[in-house]
Length: 293
Image 1 (cartoon, rainbow, N blue to C red):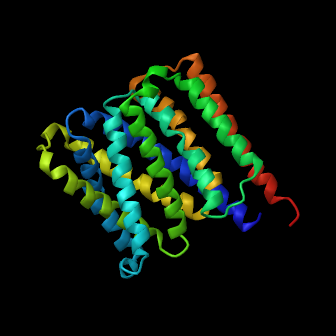
Image 2: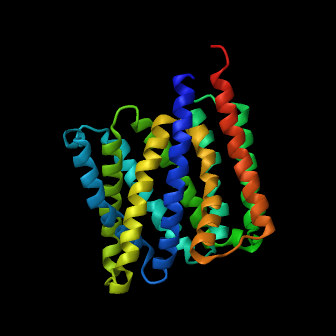
């Protein structure tokens, strides 16, 4: 197996784990956004995860490399991540999760397109097929309301997806020179500082009953950020991006485990299409590994 293909498969596994963590985080974001301003929720996510990130950096013994980074790109990612989280959290107050997810899943297409221009990655036909099939599966499963596509909430989600796509590509560029520890540390730190500065004028005291939700937000955000950094470090952006669609499978699993909600036929069909597109891409990557150089 070539190094590139091995890295892609490792990146795929990391992306699936990241999406699982972020799916849990989204449920917590939606719960908290009903009680606090969107920017405050983003700040709580950042400050809650920061102690975990600091412990991770100490454990990796990489504190010495935190200042030797490409500052312009880190600052760009900081601005993009604050904007993305604030826009998506605000949109969840206006849209259902199904509608928000359907719109946000334009991100894999944006990432793949940007990867060809910025990263000079060669995107094979299999990658485009997997992305299109995955998007079709999302639409089949979620059956979003057409009226929701022409609202400020929809515009906010699309803007968040754009921020995420550019941030992902920027992160991929940074993995060529900076350590995973520095990426996770500065992503979380800049999110915490930037969101707090913007949220401070409208800050509301956190209710005691919500602190366990904030803790869950911090933990899932930290693990998700760590996993997605590894995904884009080891795999091509155009390969790992389609596995964003596994958020639907995570959502169905969480509904069943936590709330005993059984998905309908359309959801199961859409999930099957998404899983099929993912398995198709994995098989293509494995087949590529056995081709002669």
